[in-house]
Length: 147
Ligand SMILES: [Zn+2]
Image 1: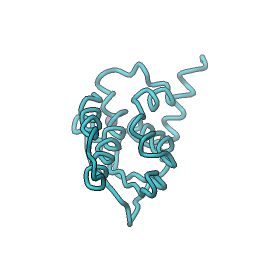
Image 2: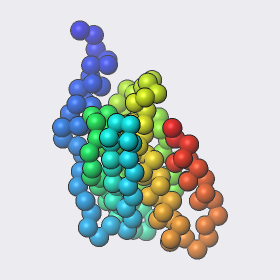
Image 3: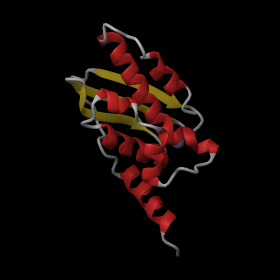
Image 4: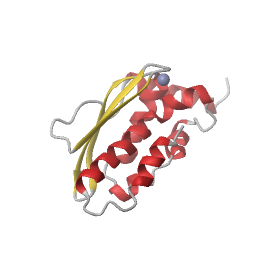
């Protein structure tokens, strides 16, 4: 048995059995849902936002191991970040944590569904809370062009 990929495989299995930040935030400031019908992944992300910072984030729903693992990692990356920094999260920030940079095209939707939901949630939040909405369209485009 060789090293690398097996470690990532174990991490993915662990996260799928014990997802991080799993649950709901009752008094969330924004929530968003999306799904990946090809695989059956279906994710909601709730966020609490104070002072332009993500003070809490939780997700719920169901998904395959890759989807659950990537959503766990993404919520960990996002928690505590400013909204500006959340906007800058890119797909490889999530994929590299789990060694998934070279994932086959058919599974990439599983891996990036949560990032799409996160960016859409942020777009929704900024759209209803910003007076000056200049520039938020790029978020929507980012979300739409992830995969
Ligand atoms: Zn999946």
